[in-house]
Image (tube, rainbow, N blue to C red; front, side, top):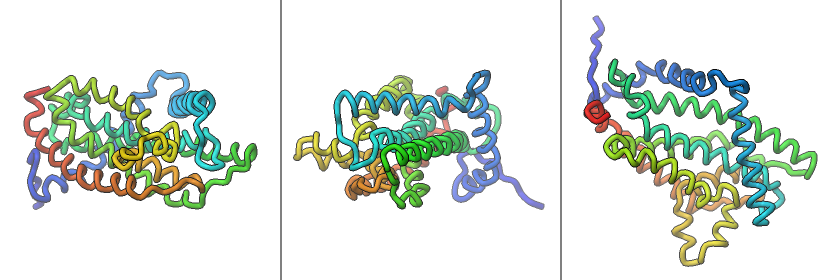
Length: 280
């Protein structure tokens, strides 16, 4: 007769077996997240298209037209900006949602046992669905740019699935690491969205990585290139824009940061599972 072990924060392989056993719950939470987000809205999923497009147009106008910053080679400024918004959105939303897991899903976590990491995994899955819609919009923008300006995307687009994972894991692992502190220090829950908004302009989302490096004093350029989000965004653009230069130091910084923070984030998150009920 099969033996079922229910052990919160189980050691060894039990915890990971539980994650696999409850994998269906992650899909349910992802569906719930999408349903709740667009419930009683007239446009529905259309908001996942309208919001990034408006953001792209504003950034293109401010940085491309008013500030007159250069784009990557012959790529239209709108394509460059939208190709930066997709990985940045993956990073920032995974960071914000994972860091607030104990707060937003406290009611569910208090009722029944399941590996708590299922909650951020489910919401991260919902983010990927929005990303698929964003990819469709990007293809339409590139198609329009091809007919109007003759822009031809890079064949490196075939590598995009790999470079989508990096900003997602980067934000997810950082969010897991911060999640226990988010319930101890509630100011952090207010500070994270504020810092994300600042980071969107410090990181080359609305302008190219080359422009960013040229604007930074030479003695600080290497330090700037260590921004892991910048490396992930530039690598994503490299897959789309043929003239975009691949910057190896920033890309390695993204990989190292993710490789370090993913196990640290999981470890910190599991520690937070033990006493989050007493703090929420």
